[in-house]
Length: 490
Image 1 (cartoon, helix red, strand yellow):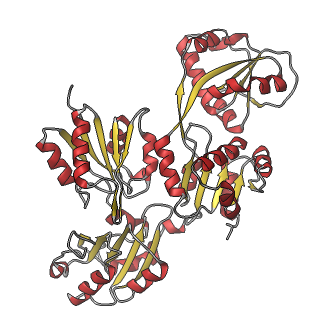
Image 2 (cartoon, rainbow, N blue to C red; image 1 turned 90 degrees about the vertical axis):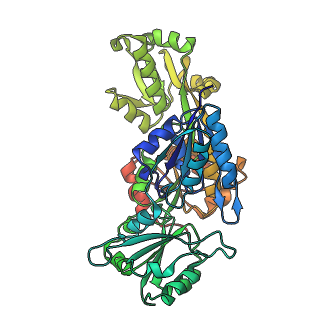
Image 3 (cartoon, rainbow, N blue to C red; image 1 turned 30 degrees about the vertical axis):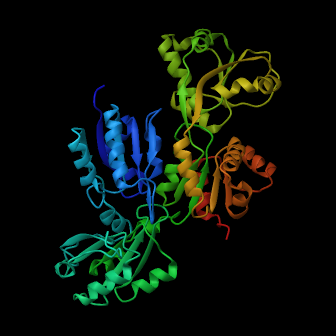
């Protein structure tokens, strides 16, 4: 068996889009992904089908895997011939213990690569409106650990050496914040030196607390701010009021759950994140094309049908991919195209085809219904509404168990203030998966604002016993406008 390779990858400070192109390349081809709690779990959806996930998150006073066990795990997986990604929050070389892991791999003759990431000590302040250097406020910058392996956990720092540095970034220093502030004052820093703590920097749930070396401890205690956080010390913090930008986004501070049913990556979550929201997509699925004999035979005679109903955007993608592979002339297709949703119609429109939203009616025409494998269970429903039809299961949907487990962990943390239902099916799906995760969906629905896009979805929410704010039209732009203007339940 050939030896594998280990990629020690920086996942960036939190926002999934801040991972490097190289890091994403490694992630997409990894056989095994060993990740920690500071790596955004949304990155896991970029893994290839069948990838192995191992969580080694380190929480205060609790380690899922200790560092020695992580080192041994990386060695063992590489020796099994696996391509391994060790996914670390921030940059692996900045308090990421990458030196220990690389040394262990080197001692066993295992090939490895260190893939830098954007470190939180620079990114979190930037998202809070604080550059770490400035020609007038700070021409020097240092990163400092906020805790250490000493008996009391206090950082073993040469405080005198920090005296001439304009801006200091302490990592994970909330617990020792009083000690840090007192030490800096004792070694020459003015008590009125500006300080800012940024928790979960670059994420929609980012929290920033400002003060001075003299006042910041009290202010942090008042709001109950905890790690993970960056503590920034220096006159440069004063720039925040002038150039803060991320926290000015229209949906900043909102924690939004997007209920999902399909596998195709939509642009809804991205649009919400772009406007500053902290977004959780749940449940999440991957999709796999089917290419069995039935698919091949049905594609071969698809020109016989007078009407074709596409049940999802994925059904459009996979149907025409199979059609192209068949080598058939597209002009053989004589059918009128129908969809169940506007999104599916948009997918057809992108390919140059017109379609209509299907309505129940009696027809003698020959129908073909294209969709996910579950449509095979719904023949009676389809034939009741539209008459005799053939069913083509063009793809299969598979739950992303590791991703969903991480989303459940997030859902059990800070409360959701808004739930967005993109489709009628998403209502039942979310209820079922929340119940399976032992989360009371109705308790969540009672305290969150419910928002939807269309009439059928509003009816499904009403059937579940709740009412929802409905966007003025079933478009992304209208939904965003609705979210920005609607009042969050208190």
